[in-house]
Amino acid sequence: MTTKAIIPITGLALVMLALGAFQLGCDSAGTETSIDVTPNNLLISDDRAVTLLARARDDLGDAESSVNQNLGQSLQENFTEVQVGSNTVLVLPLVWSVSSPELGNIASSAGQLAVYLPIKDAEGTQIISVRDQGNASGLAAIYQK
Image (cartoon, rainbow, N blue to C red):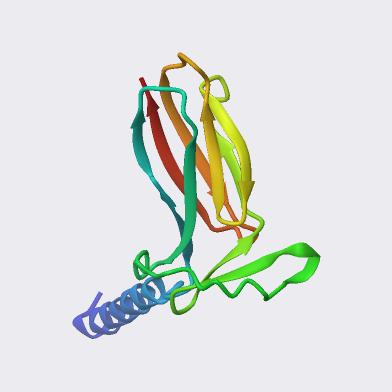
């Protein structure tokens, strides 16, 4: 292979590499949504109920946004959009679940809140997950001692 042939091939490879890196960087800027659960890491040593709050957080870390109480916007089939921060929403109703039903369960939920009820004398780590109708999700861990 001559030097004249190597230069165009090397140049083409560098252009393709640069375009690939650009594509990776532009994949989903500003559109990914996750859910923060508060408290997200808790140690409990009794069987008292724990109230959990779900808040939307965009990929820019907008976790400190306050919830806009304008719940009047309704989507189709009883889904409600809750505006949080500048461009982040939760699409209600939320679906809560637990990893280990033998440790406890979600006793009730409404809007952005859920109540976790541990089983008396059960010990272990409970992972609670929440998902909205837009497929955003979040996790919390409760350590029962």
